[in-house]
View 1 (cartoon, rainbow, N blue to C red):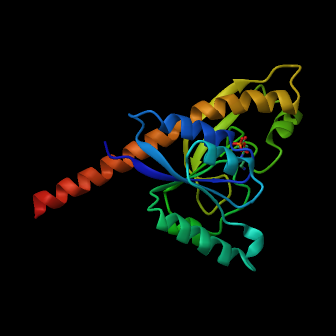
View 2 (view 1 turned 90 degrees about the horizontal axis):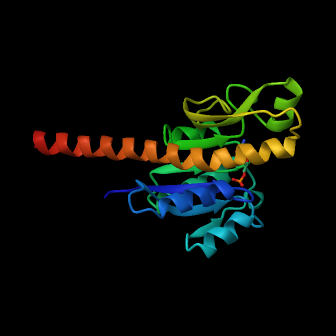
View 3 (view 1 turned 90 degrees about the vertical axis):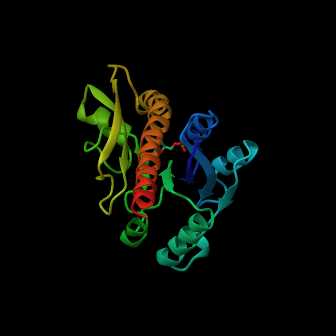
Amino acid sequence: MKRARVGVLVSGRGSNMMALIDAAQSADFPAEIAVVISNRPDALALETATERGVPAVCVDHKVFDTRELFEQQLDRALRADRIDIICLAGFMRILSPWFVGQWEGRILNIHPSLLPSFPGLDTHKRALDAGVKFHGCTVHLVTRELDRGPIIDQAAIAVRPDDTPDTLAARVLTAEHELYPACLAKVARERINASEDEQAGRSEAG
Ligand code: GAR
């Protein structure tokens, strides 16, 4: 089976990265995690990925004078690995319109709220402050507008009267670990089918 090659971008703990790595271990999962890239040298995710035998590298944004130079290096690293799809998994840098344009329709992000509610940071506290009864997470395509790209899927959880930002975050995170692999599988399958259709069309035409 053809599998999409995925590059996971991280900045910290990497629990969503782990969920993707675990899912991709299954032989019928339509994507493989080809590389993990962190913008922070101290990200725990780098260690965990290495322990799991996934190539993990750091492209430290602090080493570059400008965001453009940082992103050019990121872009080169991903192309060198022949990446088809990028998954942002707790990657805490905003990507420029240039970078997003290079990878149009091929960057997924997981966000800890039911978008379009609560884009940005501190989502669990803001959800509690707003008194919402349901909260959750969203996987969406990344576009030039922050946290506003087309939604691939969402998972909702009920807010409990005694929830704190931490208890809510923990339940949302468990939902994230289910949602992200399912969404990646869907997008990867669509890409593989589209490229097979294109090849079949070419061989019929030729
Ligand atoms: C996750 O909750 C993810 O949704 C969030 O950061 C956490 C990373 O955890 N992402 C964002 O807030 C992006 N704006 P992890 O490193 O354990 O996957």
